[in-house]
Image (cartoon, rainbow, N blue to C red):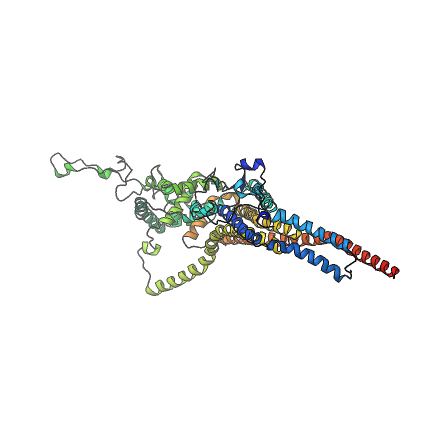
Length: 569
């Protein structure tokens, strides 16, 4: 009963050519924690078999069998066959559990298959690359955990053999997860990915930042100053409709950013206002740049005047043209192109102009051009007490409320990234202790089912998180009817700027998603624990008739022997 119990060297021919068989896991980390878990399990198994203590459960079965018979009043000369049959049954069960839950074979080695993981498809990557143990994951795990695959972790035998029962439980659980993933893959949208990309996007081009600042100072500030000086009746009917409270697309806040629809459409604003200085990319237009014309007589000092390389575009031209500022803001880097592409697939938009405006507004928030107070635009400054009061009340509202709105969003992404990593580490611990628990249980039949239920339960957490994302996408669709992307990105922009989204929708959605990520696996695990208890009770009920029959047979045999001895006397 030594080392041979842990290894069975008879290998079917098909195993030698099964490396093309892949077991799909749920994360890159799980590939390596699976290898580590069974490596530790094999080391513990070799310790148990190498020291010979593996025979103790069988010795205890025999000892307890005769001990129970003695306590039931069966003499040394009576009930021998009943005791032997009872012990024989227990030994057969223990040998079966040992053969499928403890003994290993190359037929179920992790090296005979290829552990792999394929990230879910997204708008930014419609055909994600499959990472595998043999082909590499293109992540830092390949180098950091190389000893999990190259055999350098320990000199103790083969570290990657898996008992047949646990290998089957892993394969079935992975297959169920893959089937669930395929069923839900096309059901959700990349909404959370768009949110995360929008939150982390930055503008790093210094020329673009300078042009945004220029447009803000040379077009937006003058336009907003003119708007504040005008009375409501001085706007056209279409202008009043744009800033009306009932306008859900624009409304009164439309005039708070550079690409204001009112400033672009209302006569007297961006259509006639021009940049103060020439703007690169805009050629001189004789009908527009009349201030560049010179008709000085020959020989005069003005005759040698050289026209600038570029002209002074109107603010509308500077903003809306194909090479204008808005196009550059939403298309200046690969990150922003991926963001706008993902948002186009995940949301619906009233028009392409609205989509561009939405992300230009986000870009303005990231660029953060110099803000000028509206009162100071009009030439009025605050007194000292007003400044102090506005500072403290503004700080209190911003710090108090924005923390509540942003906290769930800040905590959500680490939680969503950390829970799958925690799952992989829990599976490693589960695999590592399975042989030890099987041995310490005395090769009890219930351990087979408890362990299999444990593997299936933990691996199925990944499906719970897929369901949570799926439900989250539909909750967003319910809270943002029509999946209007401008409303969704607008709230992300407000949160990025430290403001509070109207109606606290973002805080509600983030809190619900966090709750689902945590409590759905807890609920599932609790239900599976109840099922495990019921399975254990069922196995005890199945074994009880045999034990009772054996006990009755033992007692009957003992009584018969006792009566026979009495007659002879």
